[in-house]
Image 1 (tube, one colour):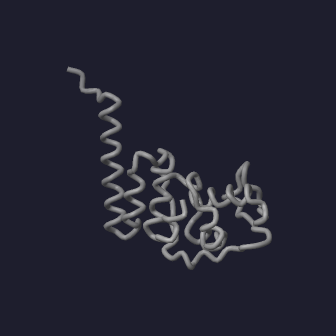
Image 2 (cartoon, rainbow, N blue to C red):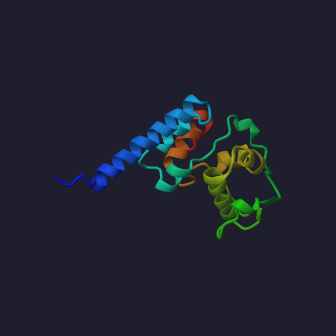
Image 3 (tube, rainbow, N blue to C red):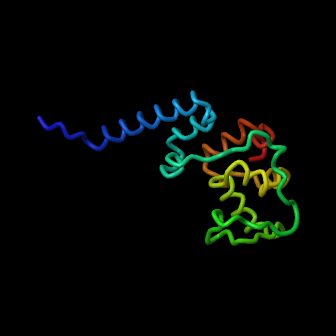
Length: 146
């Protein structure tokens, strides 16, 4: 009998191993339980599930600019997000907020995101659904905005 696992079995084992690692990280205080739960959500992209994401612990910490230009750190610059974004450019601001929600550290979120602007931009598609649910569970004032 062939003992080579079929792809489905490998996937199930990989998911189980990921869940074990996430549970250990939660137990050690290295990962918030809500983020760990989102990382096992099938709606989250594989890349994001493997690499994780951050969410600030206090929405009041989001003290980024509400007007003017935002200097974007190099690690967050993308084709759709230049190194400088004008808050008056709604499309560019939307793209910046999408990237910061997905890829920014909590510190970057605090510096770059403005809580009032985040509330005005909050709607489906701003981030992957599991990420949006974590934000909404932490900050209920966002939940009613979409």
